[in-house]
Length: 356
Image (cartoon, rainbow, N blue to C red):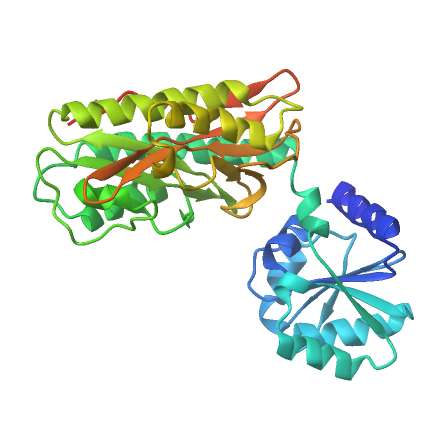
């Protein structure tokens, strides 16, 4: 945590910020380790204050490091205003994407004479490259994903609802140490697999269905993310063809992941394969995204993105083809960018089309 606080202050100096209010819960967790639902940080060159209320007094005492002085206030906005006066700062930076207009007006009213400066991505930029502790958590999440999917596959059969499969999968993840699911579990079967975000429904599985399962375990606050496809019975020739195209695109994109590679070039590697087979219009989303304390965070693997991959980044690689009224296929792995290349964190989960 000391390193993270030093890094925030270095970024503040670079931006010329006298004081910074951190209100994004994920950023608060990143800087302090606090996992409660009500907390904020006020950071200046000489002080760092963690602000919460009475409900979290004991939790904060256990989780928040001594680098932060703990302060109790009835509301974060009031706490920020009160603690800011002690710093005598004339400018307060705030996370513009995480402060409502009502909260902004309240802060402005409480700290008259202090200039408010919106900032974006300051702490998120520090979260881009994961440290060894974060990587261990993400690797554990990837293992939980593989174990839970292996167990759940045995329960996939005609007549079961997509929602039943999702419940089995989420239960299996929790049994293995997950605190919950990274997002609403996607189980999209038959024609519904053409929906990139086809959250599990009451549709009953049928023989011949392709079933896309996109899911993830939250482990110690960090989000895993994996997608695999099953065939309920022998796939049709078209289903087999589409699957092999997506698999080729995914493997090609994985080969492009390395330090210094542009995010847009990884996306292009996958997109070029799918386009060469005539399905370019059927792949309408980016090839991947960062994962960590948020399920979707920087960097983004999308068309034209010039940001370069760096060691410590953990990204997904997940091209897909989606054909309305027919169905779709997506294959996704989590990948750690290393000094010498990459490490696929979900490599233990088979990628061949599994026939059930």
